[in-house]
Image (cartoon, rainbow, N blue to C red):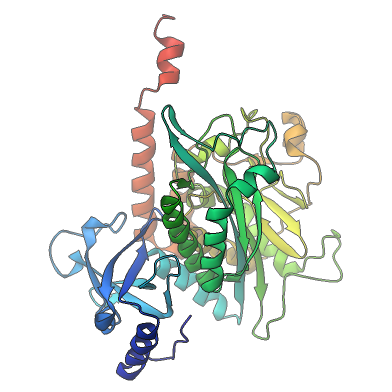
Length: 454
């Protein structure tokens, strides 16, 4: 990573160009993330780096998902201005670098740009002298095209494939290239494992502050997609591509540090014996209070709710949360307390990291500002409880489809104010339309079940 100075002066930009030129970089991929969490952008010759600092790389606003911009006038143009602190070579693609863009429209920070939305929430924390650190744990599928469809490699067929050594080692070519690329970008991969489903893996790398964590996640996806294609495979972060296998989560490990770098979520004295401070409990209470609305941001597709189902999983195993609660190292709750931090287990692998983290900060700060109490921990397996037992503990269910989640976000006045009315309106509009489109689709399951019944 090239160190960025406070100001993007002409001399600084020339210095970046010189350093990248020595590395034989010819093009810079000017990248932003759309509302769906997909990497977008354009290639810029290195000699024109200054153009994307100011005024920025120009894009047709209405051609980008979720901007809500008009086709004419000054607000029809979307400018992505380079954050030069993110400028770095892409080791998996020799000759190319990547820089992250912040959205601007009509000369102002664009309030529907996912990265700008997260920036605003990060600034709210900074006003308190705080930094949210987030460790994101991406789960994904490595698949192959076969004559009868897309599936995992032929040998990955164990009934319980968790931590399967043989399948893991058969993917070393992909995993070694990915690890080397991520490490060269400073992500620091420290663990790789085979997950609960055939063809499913998880790569863990070191945590970072919220904005950098989101940038790193997008970099991870870009690298993984490209390397998988080179290896003749398909990299997929679809939340649940197979009905009879577990889905892919994107768990957030959350903690807050003060201006001196001291962790403020931990405490020596804790009546609940979880080692958390009052601030941590209030932050977590905010997450639980706003969990229905956060579901739309953390589980943003129709397919997401095949993972978040509350009934018996066809896969036989589910670590996905369906009920709103927290517990001591309890993987069946939406919030798991572990090592004086909070693991937020709601997000799935399709989540836009900027929006999900922005929602988490906004919800957590509301919990702190209103001194909310999360109640008592649940230290039992929620899936083994009866409905009556869950009701006695006050365990409410998360929205069970995208339409309900979108409605929950629309009706959450606090998150709407924090994230911006224009953004929430556009996000809810898109996701509600997605749900309606899916609901009108007639599936093969329906025709097989009903065609000859009536």
